[in-house]
Image (cartoon, rainbow, N blue to C red):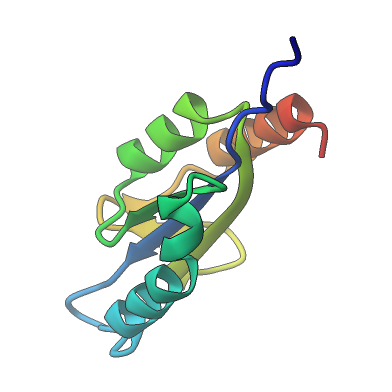
Length: 108
């Protein structure tokens, strides 16, 4: 008997900055959920929506779901060098290694 493939995971991370707030961040998160919630309820996809993403949470999600992450969306502050989460700037080399590992494991 064939086994069902794992449910694809869509990771949505949002991170605001109290000094330079992005006014539409909460609205974006809400809209994302409104569009995808029915598919999540039917277990066609698994939506992870973290509205106050920290560095540790980002790494944990990437490692915990590395075999099933189909897409990652980050909304917040960043630069060409780093993403700025609730815990501060990401370590770009470490994040890059995790993303490459995730891509390799999912066959991207």
